[in-house]
Amino acid sequence: MPELTTPQSDYVEHCSGCHGMQGNSAPAEIPVLRDRVGYFMCTREGRDYLIRLPNVAYSAIGDNQQLADMMNFVVFGLGGNSAPKGAKPFTASEVARLRTRALATQSLIAIRADVVSKLGTACAVPDSINFFYDGQQQAAR
Image (cartoon, rainbow, N blue to C red):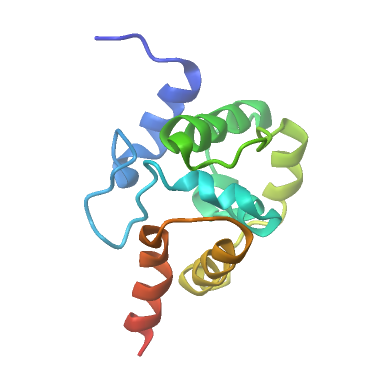
């Protein structure tokens, strides 16, 4: 068995239960990370959203650099080529700032739909990313 890096180990411990070991979640309601999550780096709102998610912002990973490293693994590792060229990795100070603005009381489905709907105008994203926007819109009807 290959030895995992600390960010990979943190992902397995804190995220893979829902998002899958390789970023491919089983239930359709859980966003697939593999080859998609990097698109969120196309906009400031999308980038911030990734850290402000309650399970990220309130993570048991208390060290901001360690959480930044894990999220960089998620975006640039699991996200593959979906991150735009020139996207900068998360920093500890950025994570610390965004954690204070966690999305705790808002509707995550509505916020995700709004963020995803804006990605297409900012970047060339595949139609598959719209599953979470279109799917949530249809479910709300």
